[in-house]
Amino acid sequence: MLLYNALSLLSLSSFAFAESKSASAECTNLTVQVKVNAPSHPVLMPVLENGYQAVAFLLAATGRDAPVDPSGLLGPPVNISKTFSISAQYCSPSSQSKKSSVVQILTHGLGFDKSYWSFGNATYNYVEAATGAGYATLSYDRLGTGLSDKPDSYTIIQSPIELAVLVGLTELLKSGDLHPSIPVPAKIAHVGHSYGSVLSNALAASRPDLSDGIVLTGFSHNSTYERWWEISTGFNLARENQPARFQGWSSGYMTWGNKYYNQYGFLKYPFFDPAVLEYSEAHKWPFTVGELLTMALLPLASPGFTKPVLLMAASSDLIFCGGDCYGIVDGPDSLSPSVFPNAKPFEAYIQPNSGHGMNLHYNASGWYGVVSAFLATNGL
Ligand SMILES: *[C@@H]1O[C@H](CO)[C@@H](O)[C@H](O)[C@H]1NC(C)=O
Ligand SMILES: *[C@@H]1O[C@H](CO)[C@@H](O)[C@H](O)[C@H]1NC(C)=O
Ligand SMILES: *[C@@H]1O[C@H](CO)[C@@H](O)[C@H](O)[C@H]1NC(C)=O
Ligand SMILES: *[C@@H]1O[C@H](CO)[C@@H](O)[C@H](O)[C@H]1NC(C)=O
Ligand SMILES: *[C@@H]1O[C@H](CO)[C@@H](O)[C@H](O)[C@H]1NC(C)=O
Image (tube, rainbow, N blue to C red; front, top):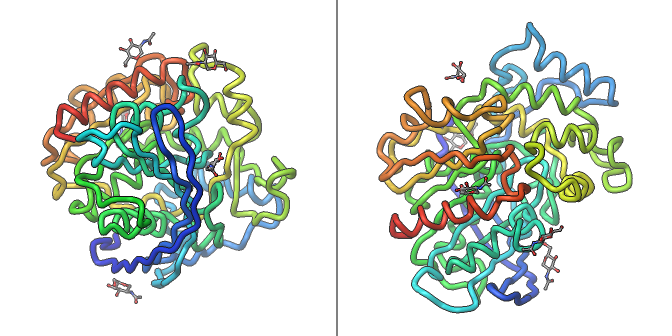
């Protein structure tokens, strides 16, 4: 295991920005330069040359003889020092309130970019709900997605480096160096979805000083079923699957086959609009070989985190619960309370009638309300 609290992070910011207003929020688009020092792990397998090799890799990674721990495919880490260009959006509520000095940093999961958090009209718009409830939000495109940098998908788009980006962004926000128009927040909450929850949890584990509260959506600490999702994707090369968008991209960028595999991994029928599935399939973003191989390197145990933690799971989450979160996320067998033994408080909630892609279901606003109420009740 690596010691992430030993990471040294230097951050600088420069920016280009554009502003827009909606009913509940004023939003600023930012391009933030985040300087990161973090470990990069050499990948000891040859770069995939074609789709056949990608499928062979999937079988090797998930078959009967597959190693439980994929870190055997990684060499000893080398520290890298790089500055990444990260596309972010800061939204503040139109009417100022006590809560507008609380900023929620939103980290999206695999398959999306930051638009996950403002997916469509008010039915699917977490940012609008959060700003409507008085909070400011900072969403960003993770490395390899949206308008952010797309460095090497094997050796640089790796989980510890993505954690360092989240740490770096948080430090810039906290020190008031994100942008001259963005004030230093009174408090910062980290809200993740799926892989974004893994990163937010890892921030609480490695830099508990940087967060005043964590909300982990589309997540559990049981990784037994992640393989089911990996298998369902078929490790399609993104450049073959959507050549119109990803032609020429490295073979380390992968995706699932079509909208039905998207449904299998992300949505619970019939609690979603087929038009939303079509849209999310057409606008999906790839995940990387580097992310998959290094996810287990992130520290999750967070005994040093003493702030509020909400685990917001989807009732029918495939990836984190094998399609049924009852008994995994709630009840005596849940692993999560022991990950956050000192959180005050730790709470778990299961959103009914939802698959893993919680923001893409008809009742998304139901869980928005639970998150806002949890934060407000706990002083955020
Ligand atoms: C990488 O950086 C960490 C933290 O600064 C340090 O502890 C470690 O020794 C470095 N590793 C190498 C291989 O230089
Ligand atoms: C901000 O970025 C989003 C995409 O992330 C885009 O839809 C929107 O038009 C941009 N706003 C402005 C004012 O440029
Ligand atoms: C959002 O759009 C969908 C159609 O895509 C519509 O059914 C729904 O009523 C809209 N919701 C709101 C709050 O406007
Ligand atoms: C994950 O959940 C399943 C079903 O409840 C259980 O059998 C398994 O032991 C859990 N895994 C861990 C690591 O607790
Ligand atoms: C919508 O979500 C809220 C909050 O979790 C829940 O109380 C309500 O029962 C849900 N409604 C449906 C129809 O699932």
